[in-house]
Image (cartoon, rainbow over all chains, first blue to last red; front, side, top):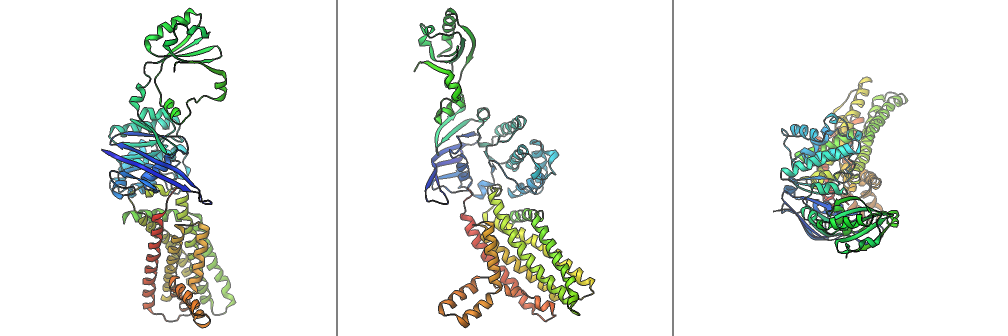
Length: 325
Length: 255
């Protein structure tokens, strides 16, 4: 069953001063299944937040359709089952954390008798119990982010939509949020979140959709991603010379050099031994042998049209001397 | 209804924690205190001066508080994106707006209560007599402020706080003179002028119906039926304005 169905949504904005149309979404299509953790990845300005706003009914799409629990955006019955954390959240600074959570709980339809117990549990979960009586205006950015997560999960929603949930968190806070999301995933909740922190996406997501220029460029199941490129091994060597390629050319996918060091990508595990023997035979020193699998970062950079994320200085120092394709 | 009450309570809390409310209260108290200082100038009419300045201060401070509080609260909520947390929950935009209006009106009721208490205390210190017309006058001023508040809500759904304040104050001024406007047009204007002023007369709130200050100060009789009619008029006018505000707010996009 699809909890969230986004079908070909298009959205454009016009600037206040001119009639020029700026297309932000150009036919975004994806879905989230029940119990799935779906990551939403894309560079700045790709349309992530706009997509989320259309899903939640804060803005209307010019074309296409959105369904949450088979109902249109903004429908009260479906919104009661949704928890949302906005990007860079602004909460009512005049309220204390308890007052804020009481307000959010009542707005989500949590019963008067249930509310105090839930607030106790959630405040404990996000480690804000000692700060419950403090006004939100005295909270740090990380504390506000945790308060934001607390209001999003307070009413035990079936679908969580989180816009950059790890933003502004220190490593401890990030781990806490990650653990909470893992726990929600175990309880069968559907989670749809955008983030720039790819390692967290790799840890949490079942599937990732990459958005670029207002369209979904790629949708990939994380397990499949990890299988992509499985078996390749990178060998780092010092004292490498181009003539060492003789006899091992068909085993090596590519070679990248930085000064006197070289990084050879070996096609398969079984070719590692002859490659290392050739390097030793040629007088090179083997520094490291590392198993490689395709990372989300590789995929992301390739999909957004930036296959090499190294700095200009690094690129200058490096020279690609051979590629197998 | 529960959700409207929650929005109203939150707005009320925000209002009473805003400095603007404290400033308005302080200003009102000072204004009423000044009436005590002015009273020696009118020999034998001390109580009338206190009542006159006091009731005028309550009315003006109430309207100004409604304009500035109402224009900033909705706009701030939209501008700072706190509204995302509300509108992504199972509540309609109309309920949100109704709650917001109720919260501001509640805060203004508090301002009225404090200012009235100060005025009554001042009258009591001067051993004056408080007649029912004083309470009726304060009540009508409160209704007038509620009508102005609904107009502020209407403008704040689509424009900036500055323009909202400007338009609301213009309508307040025109509404206070709407009766005179009709008389003026009937005496001096042509057919076109009469049509325009006639439309404005019915479109603008007739705020004169909320003015009982003269009767209260000079101890003149007043009809309780007028109070009832003014109450119904305020309720209907607020409901119509809120309906238009909701229609605009429902179409609004939150980029």
